[in-house]
Length: 250
Image (cartoon, rainbow, N blue to C red; front, side, top):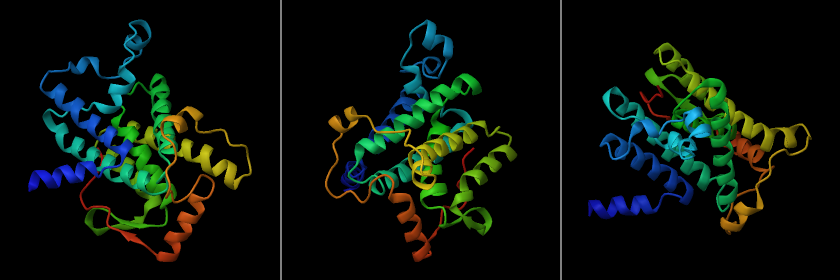
């Protein structure tokens, strides 16, 4: 019975989130048992450019070392990934897999390019936080979330609270800051600038994505409409959300 429940849960994960979630489990476990060499999985500029190890940009967003004291942080990452990627894919992007795939591709490529400046070798943290930023800080910014010790604040501040906690705990915070910046860049170019400032849309979903990931019936909204209507819905409903006490991103 338990195995059937797990199987039903896994089959119920949205298509794109399922691939990302599965890869983020399989790659670290294979590396943990030395089936994959961890030294071949992180992002390394010279290895990509001069040794043509083109898999590194992909594995760097899936791999996270789970030995030592990193296991708890890795599990928190998986929770964030599953929870907020699922909410985006089944919410504003419901029935529009090409548009959600473009969001993931844009954020991932932006992080890969940013690596040249920040020398961040593992991209799971900023990639997950970029999705969390778009979901909470933009699409559900007025929702009240609950953090440690019963503190409550609007969701627009959650990524910054996570960044502050990480800096206080001595983990640097650069990965989190990069994730916030990339998430904001996507939202600004895709939604904010053309909708609120009347500017040109700099980002468009390539037709090849629509070819392989066609729209399905039942989508809730399209680009240019969802952010404002989503915010209005949250304001009218005065929604509260218990983000999860004690869960934090290192």
